[in-house]
Image 1 (tube, rainbow, N blue to C red):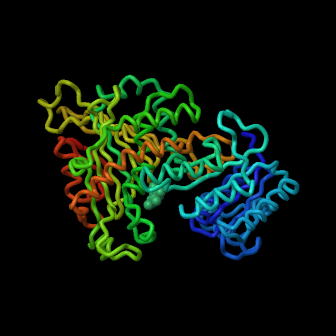
Image 2: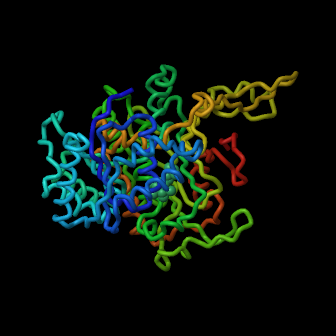
Image 3: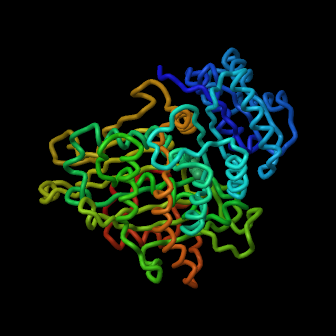
Length: 518
Ligand code: BG6
């Protein structure tokens, strides 16, 4: 069992959805696993007036409703009581120094009553507009002691901040945000969360690549034909349309989650398994992405928006009808792009990416497509095609890895079928993977930044995205409409098919497509 540091955690925006759906349930799971110190206290902080007890009631309800193990096996009352004993609430504004003074006094009191030793974890679960006042107040009211630059390790009490995406909405705002944050915190105190990095399969990508010797020799342009990354969601943008309309699929999913997946697939082996070495390698990937010219963006990027239609026989309104969407909005609910990583390893290997709302299924996966054998020996003797090999890294809904190989169908004739060698987390390990937030909050308390985004990493990713945004701004072309419940506009198919390839994964009927080449 790892030793966990005592600490007081403050969740700003504690009355919001993220806290209820993810953060509080994650704290409960950590308590169940024994991954919180005895000397722990949690303060929910928000503008809503509420007593400690009222907040505890909300926490118990959200645990019963949303905590992973509670949903399956019921609530462990003893662990819940243990956690609730350590939960408090404070009403306060995000820009009021007097409120932060009160918070400071309260945290100091926990150092005595709960022996939290001056260690603080501030979780900014708020809209980005609150990042500035909160981090300024934390700095000015002395709740945070900024680590001096050059200090490798901060001795004694620590203070850290977790922030949720979006980390800016373009390169300029990302630079401003980083500048703002680094006034109150040193980079080693900032934990930019991307929940995809907390997903077990995503972490396993590194283990698969660097703990097995079979992949490294073939993990390059000589053996890999192309890489596809699909992150499709069946849900519409309705629930958060106000936010989504200002963001769109490129900012909401590609700049962060999908680029993280791409970086983990494409990066060089790090010198060590520490935060700095791994993040250095990821930055190199973004810096090697071939710069698109904004005037040629439409050749490499397709944006779509779902129209009105029918999904499984149910009429579905188009994106423009969602509450909070500007009339005539050109925000994309789907994006497909083709990128090249100009490095020795990936020279000429295309990375195809697509993501969208209102797709036929929720599926997140990376498909590494290997080149076909140099001679099509079997093709002459059998009717069935010989498929290229695919390594499929499944992130959701199933978590696991599978390898598609060609196998002979038993019998007198030479018939070949694509068969799947499957590794599934739940069946192999007999337990389901923890939720991303459990792992990430635990890492932040432990001071491990490996699975968090470094400031320059976010900036380098924005550099790639900015060109696309600029191209869209210059273009008179609107997003292509697509019917809800489909895999996006036809142009997304054309993007890959004109290279003689097809999107792998599921077909429009939800059935897997195995033969991905055309
Ligand atoms: C969030 C996006 O970051 O990730 C959402 O803002 C999206 O729009 C979500 O639905 C997807 O996460 P997951 O874990 O369900 O794939």
